[in-house]
Image (cartoon, rainbow, N blue to C red; front, side, top):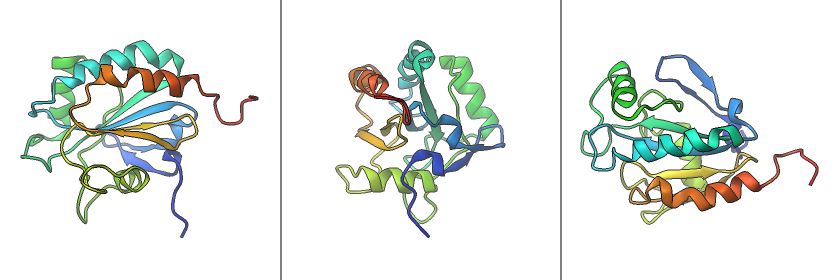
Length: 170
């Protein structure tokens, strides 16, 4: 079996329980984030939503993957998580079912992301709200620590959005 090289090679279960083929985001700039509702970084949802609102028309999206591996800060079920995010932060970007981002139960998307861009702890994810920027070609451009607020990612996102879509004449 060959190792996947782009985000489009994966699927994940949406927060509504439906399987989502991530090839639906091919050609877009994607920010993948492991999230939690009871974390000190939870207010970042607001900044992520602001980026999504502003940049989605240009081919940008945020994919939020709730995770309960850090301090039990995402204890709720999918419906509770979705309601919390929508009610408190107006989240309308795609959310997925809870995943593990470290250890033997790591979701394949996060195995791939960590292999593509290691961090301070090697391939392990340090905490909630670790972010991975994926370019239009489906490859990981950069990894950001939880402390990197969404507004600090804007220049990198803008640069990725300026890149031609795969297959476009350069």
